[in-house]
Image 1: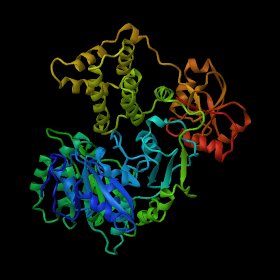
Image 2: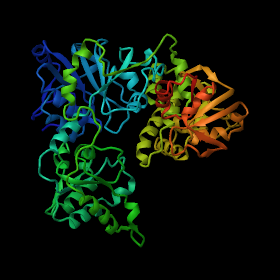
Image 3: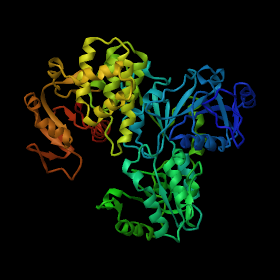
Image 4: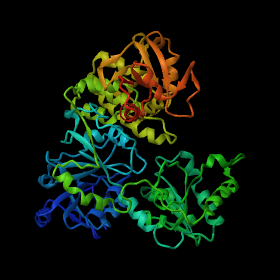
Length: 621
């Protein structure tokens, strides 16, 4: 099989279940489906390729629609990803998509959410529908951090989300930054096609007896994990010789030298199985327990089967000596506990339309195509008569504390001559959390390096230079060290090295820049700020504690009440204030300041719509 997709511009001819079309022969496919609604599925070489691939495969079964996978000629897929695409049994169209005339025939294009991927140009009439990254990604994260508000007319929700008002995301985007056409972004209760397939695979009556040893992408596994993969796998093979042990590396890591060596060393064990199929579902459905090294808030294995996931942290079981090793005895006791649990476990997931997500979409497709409002779907308004402009929007995000990657990167693409656009992109990327597996954070920090290299070849104003110095000094030390390390890999003399050298020298003007008191903003409008007076605070967390112990805050604001909806903290004391129930907010006419950056929309919904509290609401930034 040839694997030159994305490497050569020559026409691809693969033998397999899928049909590959080029510009030369795709017209016949469109003629054949001229009476169908044409649905495109944008396939990109990412870690979630199997999510949208499974969706395309299941949708292609329905004769009333024409489904086609879209692959750009410049996309570079790994051999394993190519194998997966080739075995899907679907129609795939490979072209220079930005130049393709055939995209105008698409009624709908389905897009996978992403942090950085810049979507292709689609005709104005084409409806853009987004898939969430996975079952564990909240709707808000898809819409805000992953840019769904900028890209999607509809978002296919995997499961129910916290109650939000229709205007919860009002004015958090501006039309010129958006790539979709509707004045809303609709949350559609869909489900997960891959979950549905997993659920069906777990239905047979035979009880599972195998164990799965699951590895994430080695790029994001903790570095120490690689030291103990073979030991862990050998322990499982020898301790549970009566059980089949499936070893499942991340598909792209099957070519990793260490993984290949481990396979060679252990393949002689009679109960060893290398799980190397493009999709893991068939192997995982036979497993009683999944063993992994990373914490998953949710994983399809547990969600679809109801069976346990055991997280093994090697550092907890290390023995000290001349050579670090693992004492597996305590871990075995923990694992045995889960293996011996009742076999009557059932799926208890809250995923929408379990087993029939694609059927649900097909049954309701007319609501999308005919632009009719569905009574069960939520349509989030994006702007109103008092909507902000692009400059105000960027100022709003800069005044906050959360990442805004997609907004900032799209803004930089649109306005590369604006100094604030450079600063906003770097500020957002620098706000990425430092994850337990720092490799995830480094994904964002590498983007910082790319932008710094662009800045180094640009004549930037002196004012921006000072602001960039201040930004760099406020970055976490681990982030700054990583950036410097990456820049040091470049030539001995380079503009970016000189730029970083300037950042490392903090002059008096930069040092005198002081953080200001956080802004209290009404309705996400920087023009409506609360600067003094009586207030009521909602939230008894760290943000509130910082405010109540900040002299700049206490000199300007008179806090008359502190409330929180968590009964566990009600009655406790924060900086001298007793935490009360939100019901008591009715006792004062003072505005309510919501002290939560992560859940401000949900809290406002609770107060305004569920409690019907008639007060002014402000959020902390």
